[in-house]
Length: 95
Image (cartoon, rainbow, N blue to C red; front, side, top):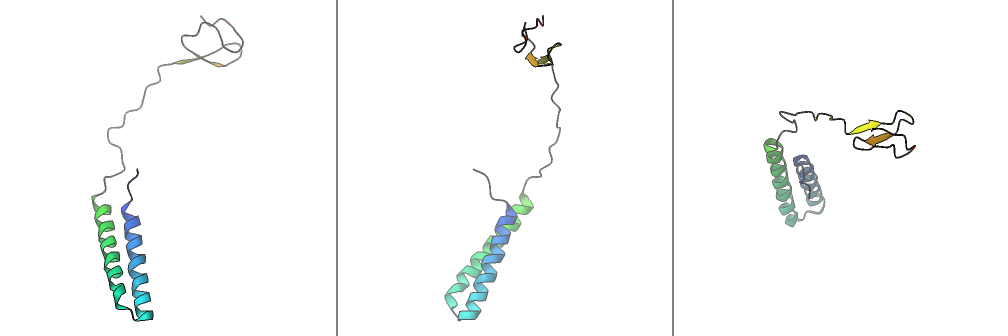
C-alpha cells in the first residue's frame, strides 16, 4: 500500500478548515468547530510529513552493464539468446 504524501494532508486540511468555517459562519452552528481543528491537525501532519520526507534523489547509482545476453541472427536480424545454436525464426546456424 502506498503512503499518502504530505501535500495531500496539507491540502485536505486547508479544505476541511475553510469549509467548516464557511458553514459555521453561514449557519451559526458551533458544533462545526471540531472540524476546523481537525483540518488544522491535517495541515500540521502535512507540514511534518513534507519536512521529514526522504529525498527522492538516488545516491551512488550504478548502471547495469550489458553482458550481451542477446545476439542477432545475421540473416533475418532476429534477436536470439546467446546460447542458441540456431535462429528460432529462420533456422540459420548461429554457432
